[in-house]
Image (cartoon, rainbow, N blue to C red; front, side, top):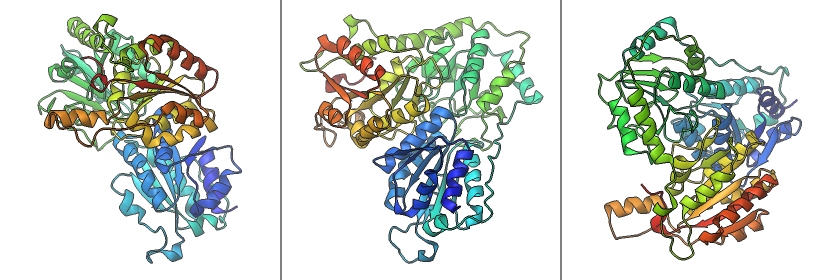
Length: 547
């Protein structure tokens, strides 16, 4: 057995079901090893798309997404996925084929230093220089990606090492990951603060959630009338219809909802941390005297910018388990606070009546109408994915997230994420309906993965919101340099023809009278097993939901 086979078999032993890759001659032995496993190899058209898929898979499943690329240019292209996984705290393992050991330090073809390239955005960078350690390195990488604050790990595979014989033949077993726990002392502090809080607030986010953990936190919040707000693009921990769901903080949030963060006399942070987005660029909840109980498995509290009254080192799952035995003797009446927080979110997440929507110009439709038509057709456990741009506001505000996970998006704000994320989500949950929301600018960054979706039979509905511009940048441009539009306008291809050329069903939405029927047909096409694309033309001035 060569080292490449040992690596592939170790991944299989660790529960890896999919590997997202762009092949390269530098790791042919690993590709050969994958041939003898039951791991599904998803061959992508760009390393950035492959890395995004691995990140989304990590978000969706909680298990490390695995991506493989070649040296030099391949590694450079994959870096965006590693960066995304680092800032979003997602378990991911990137394998990079490298030049042979004897060719190092000669400016050899595609030579680079993985430590310098990835050291600042990865939890660990390892080079498999010894054949007998290959399996152990893989096992440790898989553990490290999940331990504490999850994140990306990079493993370099020298071409000569992976082709060498693997001595011994014994493979390293999976290493258990510690999830922390809530001690009696932690529970006592939590109980003390909850029993006197008049305006308690739960802030949820981060990784490491399960449906059971979501249900436990939701039940506790409803029982004790504690509103719950989510981190940016983490709105699927609390059911869309729950009276405890008070919306989210960060991008596209409601102003009054953001104010809850300052008004709360107790903040319980579960899974995530108070970084710049939920705190409106470090302007909210910055009082060092604020009562903040933080529950996260990260002992270093990376990214947290607020006071810490108590740090409970536990994953959301471990915390949720402890809630079952947390009994409160008495609490202040929080019903008014609870009800008001919910009302604010309902105002923000309910589509406006038809009379209050946009008047569409010629050859354009109103995205409010599209969202309404789509939501009517979707099952309760539907998943949405999206990336960065104005198109994100629509699913963030209106998509009914009722099952965890059901919102796969990136906090980093990097474009090109939506379609790869949709493919990965469908592979992770093949029985669930998946909607990809993307903008015209965003889609063209990884739209080449459309053929990947078709090839691997991942029927997703792709909604391309076309406003012929980089809309978010235009918005900032108008704020700082009004009336001086420069460098933000786009000319787009015929997206339907592009989709059809790749084997997908497609339709253009530019007639308001056809919205309902066209959306219904698109959903039916996906239900029948086809990738479907809706090209939605919207006016540049109507690219965002009404306030």
